[in-house]
Image (cartoon, rainbow, N blue to C red; front, top):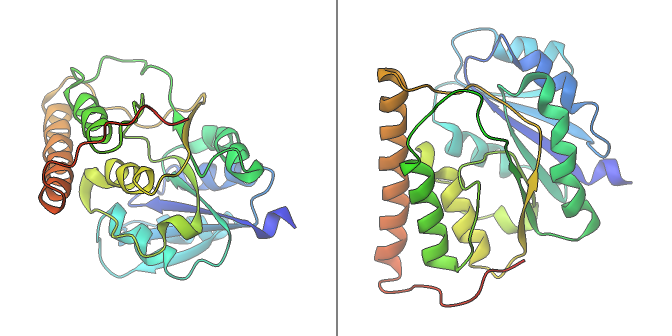
Length: 235
């Protein structure tokens, strides 16, 4: 059965105000057989609320960061496809069905949600630009949404990968999976989540993102010095 093929894995840290809506929206997606919320050491009622909403919950005793939290979940996954989602999506999480479809049909090995433009002014584009540059440098693939955590992927492709901690997770996953020669596509969705503005907190957040992505790129450069893809963009 299709429902036995897919698990939705939702990383959540202190998301008690949105996690119930997120889980309820994911339930509406055709093909989802199981919803697993990874409660990454939340100090609020995230885990309890997720469980009440109908999700299975993996509770971590301490906050280890999104990448390591997801990796702990992936180890025990037996389903063929994983749909990774963030806990703050709320009611729009059902849009992830558009991301799941091409992987279910075999049209892609990994599909990534391409968000609409944010409603309020955010950063200056340096973080996304760095992510795009890093992915293209190692794989030859041009991507519009390098930081999107909403993605469906075949489980066999991520088993054994070392998920990056911090904000470099998504860029690292894209590079590692593309370097396997896999088909990766982006799918337009009408999704929103918490946005950071052009205030001090927003710029500090983006500064951390930039540094984490730089670490991901530097790590892969050290492993493969001078390894730059000359290939054309893959479909």
